[in-house]
Image: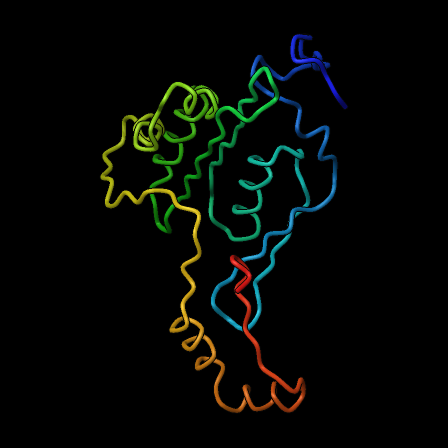
Length: 190
């Protein structure tokens, strides 16, 4: 679809609120599949039925139902007038085993009154600022802060460790059955 940039943006039917696109209607019904590389021979894949089609809500449901880890998730993308991505962001909070249920209630209450994460990012909120809002009323400590980077951390040493963990017999079986043994990083493709 082409659109003259001076034309107003198409209006959404039944917006959930002023800043919310109805993603759930576009996603529809089905299953959410999550694959995780745990450093084993094969990826771990879990699945749950979609509860709403809203990505954050379905991820929170996945963590709670499939991994038994109560979780709160917020995701958002603020789209600019020219339809470019202006402010994407998100956060994920998970309960540690044995955590006091009162902590979950405080985080849930704080999350309910927080502005949309994309608006917070657009206003310049830092990750630490969002944590402060989410954990308001709780005693917490930020142990480490790591800058966000999009790079792969795979190394020859990590691959060697993974291969060694398979054991010599398993590697020999792979060579005998497949004629080769190869390793490919699922993140960077090397």
